[in-house]
Amino acid sequence: MNDFDWKNLIDPLFYIHFDVNGIKLGIYIVLFIVFAETGLFAGFFLPGDSLLFLAGIYSRELIENILIIENDFLNVLLLATLVALSGILGNIVGYWFGSKSGYYLYNKEDSFWFKKKYLVQSKDFFEKYGGKAIIFARFLPIFRTFAPIVAGIVSMDKNKFMFYNILSSFIWSFTLIFAGHYLYGFLLENYEIDLKKHIELIVLILVAITILPVIYKFSKKSKTQDLEN
Image (tube, rainbow, N blue to C red; front, side, top):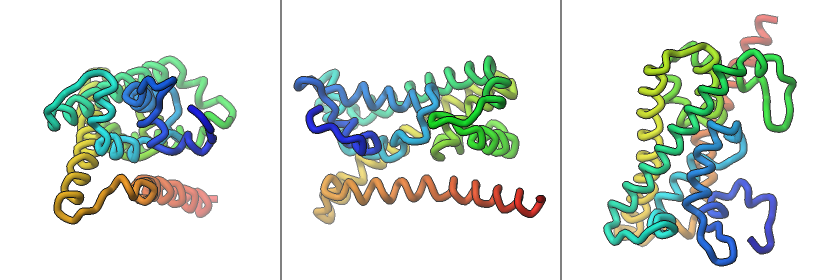
């Protein structure tokens, strides 16, 4: 916690290596961030996809915050499962909030923490793809924050929502964490490329991959609105 810099808030490694007086808390911070992305409307600035990919690389270090497991696969499996469960819980809170506060959100003024245009865009996205939007949104920043809220607003069937919620959370978690872990091992063993030495590049690539579809979606929507006007 020494020499804190506000830029640390968008650095995944800051959370993975987080400690207080030598006590490692990375696993708890990672799980909280995953929950907060959909449960606390914090998805627009917290590192999501890049955090999970890097968590896969540092899976042993994170799991050792709570217990020691010698088996490498079980380390990754436990981490991915815990992250998936946090994502499920976050979506449940988002759905509940949407079902209780839909009218309030549509009439709420913009602030640093809340942008109504993101809610509207997510609603359009949800109406286009239905339940599948819950799965797609998991891999799209901003959309994954508002998708469960919109599901609550439109009173999506709870059983249907939970099915897509559980499915999407496990797909998202297992895909990114296992990819990070085994790609790191593969490149290091076969090509002597240590991904831990290229963290900034990895983050930039992952941010670009996940953000570009969102930017495209927003720009396309803006152009359509301009033509209509």
